[in-house]
Structure formats: C-alpha cells, structure tokens
Image 1 (cartoon, rainbow, N blue to C red):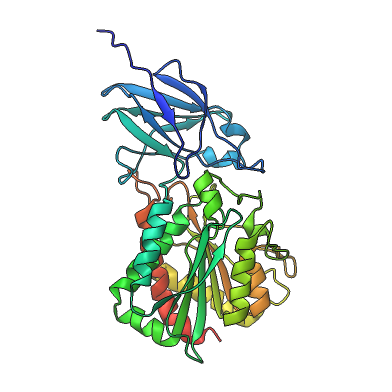
Image 2: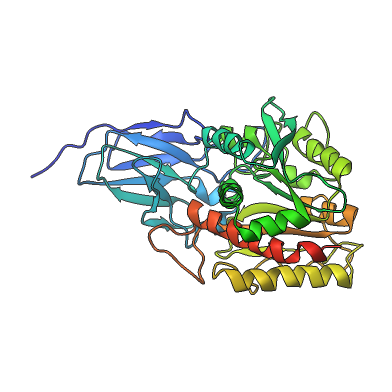
Length: 382
C-alpha cells in the first residue's frame, strides 16, 4: 500500500536554531542548508525542528552546503543527533559524500529536533547560574555584557582568602561548542555534591567560573563567532568594547583577582578524542610549566577512560605560539598552567557509545574527573 506523506514544517526560530530551507516539497527527502554566522563566513552548527513526520516511515534530510562549511573534513565519521523531547538525544544514520551531509530517521513521533550536537539552551544556562548562586560559598562576583547586552556571569566558588590558588575555568568562547557548557554544568553538579575531594580543593583554591563566554553567538545558532563576527578565541591580544567585550570582561577580572591556573573548555569538530592543547610555544614556557601540563594529563588519564594523550593538535614550535588564543595569552601573562580542553562533536573513538556518541552527560562526567585532578594539583600550581 502506498502511503502519501504529509507536508513537513521546518522551524529554527528558537534558541540556537539554524537552518535554511532549499526545497521541502518532497516530505521524504528535504533539502536544506546551514546558515553562516552573522557578519562571518563561518558555518557548521545546525539545529532545527521538523513537524508533520509520518510515523513508521523514513525521512531523509540533506544539508547541501556541508561541503563548504568551516571544517568540511569533520563530517567524515560524524553522525547527527536527534531528539523527540529535547531531553534525550541519540545519533542517527549519517553520510557525507564530499558535498552534502545526509541523515535519515524512521519516525517514531510526528515531530523531532535535529542538531549538530546536544544543545545547551539559554534557559538551562539561567537555571544553572541560579542553582550555583544558591550553593554555599558561591558568589556572583561580577557580570559582563555581550555585544548585544546579554549577561556574562562570573562566579567565584570560595572565600577569596589570601594565599589560596585562583583557578579559572571558562567555556563556550565558540558558541557552537555546546559540550563546553555541559562541562560547566558538571562542575556545578560536583560542587553541589560537596564531597571530601571538593572540600579539600576549596580549602586550597578558589574557582572562578564563566559558564558561557558567548551568549549572543549561542542564541543565534553560530558556530564560531559573536554578534560582531569576532572569533573570541582569537581576540585575547586586542580585545575591545565594540567587537569583543566578552573577552575584555574576563581579562579585567583576571587582572583584579589573579590567575594560578586557566582552563578554556572547547569542542573540536574533526578529532574524535578528548585532549588538551598546552602552551609549549609560548615565549615564557618553562620546564616548571611543562611538568604541570604533563601532571595534569597523566592524572586525568588515571581518572577517566575518556581522556588520552596520543591524538590532538600538532605541538607549537618554541616561541611560535599564537598568543591571540585564550590559553596561550593567559599562560604567558600569568606564568601559570594554562590549557585548552577539547571534546569531540563525534564520538570518542577510544571509548565509543554508538547510541549517543559524545554527549552532554559525558561532558559533565569529564568535568567531575577534572575536579579530581585539580584537587590533587592545587597545592603545586605555584
């Protein structure tokens, strides 16, 4: 029996939504495209809702401009994520032919959301900040403003007592890297649990947390830039009030309070592993900092199967670091352990999960393991 499929309705008019409709006339085969970042040519992030699915039937979606995206080689081995309730996300069969990215779904419900990665909404961000502020010892230390005037909260966990180490963790400089704020939720979850390891860490150190550095870009469905078209992780040598107030805010607060360690949390489109990038190319890189980097990596490997040291970015030559990057800039300015932590958009090939790939929960679990490491290392940071 031939079934006539109902017309589909495609919508992205919501937080972090991004899609352009090329041709939705065939409900079984919808042609789409990813919208570039505002005032930038970058694009890769997508997030959209489909209504009118026919239950039990296959629906195919083609992102026709994927081959021209910012990281077009990243689509190899990638699987899109889908959810019927925006709570439980799963991977769907996906193919890349060098030009278009195609994925399919045998519909179990009449509507579904698709995304590049499990999204972290602004509403959830607001709830996270409120939950954190209600924890003992957590203060809203300052609030910055994005280009479009959205809040950028800086939380301090600890009492600011003299002599304590100052550990900074920031996330989502690149707005499409939603795993970064899932990581920050994992930090808050662990702090709320307040176990002996957390208590010992907070005896030695205060945590300075910026859970989302780029709210404008995240809400707009950008991959890489803020509302002014600026890549924030390339603005740490020339931050300005008009193009990168988000970075300027963080720098002003760092100068006021000091930095003994800096961790910048990101996601990587291409590499299917969790890894860190260090400051080996900085002019001020020393054997002391090299030993701290290695200790962090070794300790994290002991605490989670989701971290490894084989795969990652090529090492910078001595003195050849790109100091416009957050981790390099902070490490050089404060002579401190400073790392970029990268998580995959795909799966972690060393510890795969066919159903979810890398996802929000695994990002949160990684954060808990990182706090274990910080608890062990806090006393040795200086």
